[in-house]
Amino acid sequence: MMAEHIGRRRWAIAEGYIPSYSNGPEPQFTSHETACILNTGDAPARIAITVYFADREPAGPYRVTVPPRRTLHLRFNELEDPEPIPCDTDYASVIESDVPVVVQHTRLDSRQAENALLSTVAYPAG
Amino acid sequence: MMAEHIGRRRWAIAEGYIPSYSNGPEPQFTSHETACILNTGDAPARIAITVYFADREPAGPYRVTVPPRRTLHLRFNELEDPEPIPCDTDYASVIESDVPVVVQHTRLDSRQAENALLSTVAYPAG
Amino acid sequence: MMAEHIGRRRWAIAEGYIPSYSNGPEPQFTSHETACILNTGDAPARIAITVYFADREPAGPYRVTVPPRRTLHLRFNELEDPEPIPCDTDYASVIESDVPVVVQHTRLDSRQAENALLSTVAYPAG
Amino acid sequence: MMAEHIGRRRWAIAEGYIPSYSNGPEPQFTSHETACILNTGDAPARIAITVYFADREPAGPYRVTVPPRRTLHLRFNELEDPEPIPCDTDYASVIESDVPVVVQHTRLDSRQAENALLSTVAYPAG
Image (cartoon, rainbow over all chains, first blue to last red):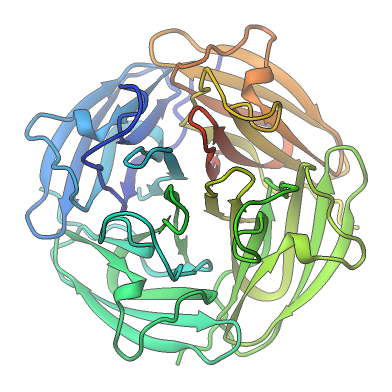
């Protein structure tokens, strides 16, 4: 089993927007933005997320840990400490880790009756 | 708080198309193309956008500024100076900044009753 | 006006699939796969596309030219020479240019009543 | 005809989620996650896939071969050996090849009446 740390220590996601309402059964169809973080290595990945806005100073750092050889699909709308991210608000994020990880960004938007999806690998920034 | 400029000074988005009609409440469900620009640093980012077409010379530069430690989710259909971008027309864009920024491209298409989404990190070209 | 060639000379798109039917007014809602090619420079870009399949030898080269300072949003379902690309068939493509260009991949799927979209910058392979 | 191997030997996809139900005619509209693998070269590509989860040790390796000058659009929900990937479960994957290949990730989600799509080039990790 491979235990090497794959990826980068810093990633940026310039897009961010949490819709304020949803259609369909929860929690699968709750509108959400996700940062999918993959830690392939043998050490835990200590993550710090900074969130940027259009008209105020950044929020954070939000801290999470991804255990060794695990993936965490982190929903931005579940972040609460130091403050929740407001809905219907443009934001962006920078994700920093003490070991290399891989980050992919996904949104499920269920504001209308049928859900829409987007995804992209985040920008590897360091 | 991190104040380093993350990213690149030049980005390209080869896809561009502003649908001419929409469904759902405005402005959230107005069909639009967005360039999400993140400026993580302490200096303002002065941006110049050039727009390319299939059958005429490029338009621009369109100029916007992203303040320090802010994100701007710029809708192409709101650009007016030097000229608006026509709807239902294939285009592409190059985004240049005097400091490094991160750019991600998103489209919301609400021409049909249910919205569709696409997104990708732009191509880092310099 | 910038006239430098931005991008790469070779790109790969591993995903390809042309749905065989559509919903909605044509041609905007005809299901299609597109390679959006941006040529920012002063020379024409002579493009050769090779198409790969799951169970037969590759097809091509398909040849197109993108004029200087223009973008071409090429629909794979409009390619005819040397042979059309069959519908409902998995394929992939490599796009080669004699000058640097930028390539982004998009699909509009309108097989069901509401359209779906995907997009990603192609893989820069040379 | 080009026979060079294009791409990388290792790729990561941090996002993974197989919806447990679908709408529409099978198999086209069965909800699925796909790793589109392109082997442009003259040697077969021997692929090993490791799948990571949120709360257990990784599964795999899953082994597939992509013949020379062929593409394989591999559906994760068809993997069975050494074990199927459970539905409605967050996962991630690392794809390793003995020759360079190109990998792109796609999901079709047909849980609701209209399908949704996402796609991104995977992260080139080696």
